[in-house]
Image (cartoon, rainbow, N blue to C red; front, side):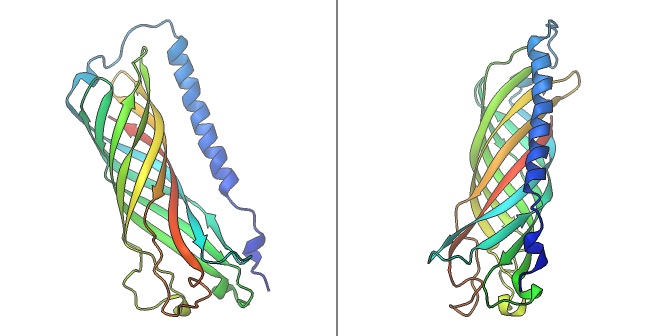
Length: 247
């Protein structure tokens, strides 16, 4: 018997629409800055500072990438929900167009995993709710274009470490007792784009970033033939962050 939630529409399209609408709004602001005849520069000397600080707020969505030992039809279905992230920014000016950034923060996320093994007949066997509270420690290089009026686009990338406070790694119970477990520490690489907008009293920066785990996060069940973890070769998180930074 299939759990009824398998037939519910995923909220991924809604999240994609949210991200698209946010960046369309950002594009409108950028176009207004680009074609404006106003030449007065806001925060003209902001980027000449060696060290600046700020904070960010944002939303995220996390998924998993599963690789399997054997190709079978019983793949794991992941349903994502929108999460929340918040953190601080330390920015070190290296050159006119290159900055080193440390952006420690906390990201809250949830993923629902549906296991399609035909031996599962009860909803509590098919579903695992995976909650994550990640302390994010990214060290990033920001490469900017030349400032034009009061805006400046950039690309950003680097490495990060995630410490999951909700991993359950040390829990002696596994999926046979209803506990899905992940590793606590995960290394990631990050890539993104954004635009700096120089406003009269602060710099506002919307950015879109992808976060991709490097090491396997799955803690396997005690039974090597477990229907939950036995066929999984690796499980890697993939996240999309929409951040709004204020400096």
